[in-house]
Image 1 (cartoon, one colour):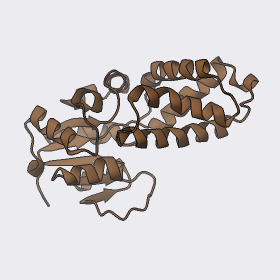
Image 2 (cartoon, rainbow, N blue to C red; image 1 turned 90 degrees about the vertical axis):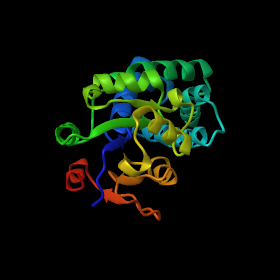
Image 3 (cartoon, rainbow, N blue to C red; image 1 turned 180 degrees about the vertical axis):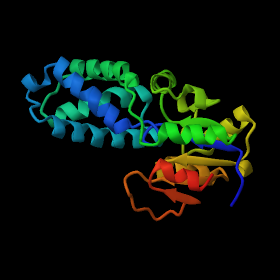
Image 4 (spheres, rainbow, N blue to C red; image 1 turned 135 degrees about the horizontal axis):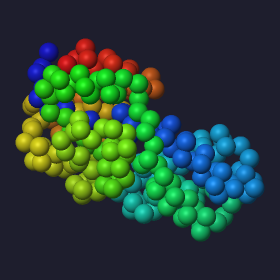
Length: 232
């Protein structure tokens, strides 16, 4: 088994439970903004609709078709439109409040802290590569108690690039002193994390929390964070 020195983790959907944290935040917004009275009586449907638009817009953002500000508010706007609410002001207010509230959430996937302590005790250098926004991601990391485990936090905003583009991985190597041969990327997204890392010459570990089926074969696949201990 190959020896690694540098472990690069994705944050959202890999360690930090984005979907659960987003759901808590949207539930609070649903109450605070009286969206029930606006006709959104089924919160679970509202949440599923948001996830659908969020993923579509993130895909367009990763591919360079839209800017970050458009992503932030249009995911709310499209969700409201599906409930026949054409209110730009409400959508923008929801976007602002969502980004203000979301980073305070603390839910991480099972075994996250146990795994990070295990890896730190074994002497690995750990860093994050995330497509999230600089301020938001640092707040998430701090509030979830993850700050002490990671040396560098490489964001798309800070690196001026996005996974799966090779430039963000090259930026991470330059910042940390790592290289493709002694590093591995650990993430949940086949396109952004796994194929992106492969194109940068890195080994990859696909954290398949959702039992997704993929045609691409990563270096390793695990179905829980606990399984990573069998690799390191």
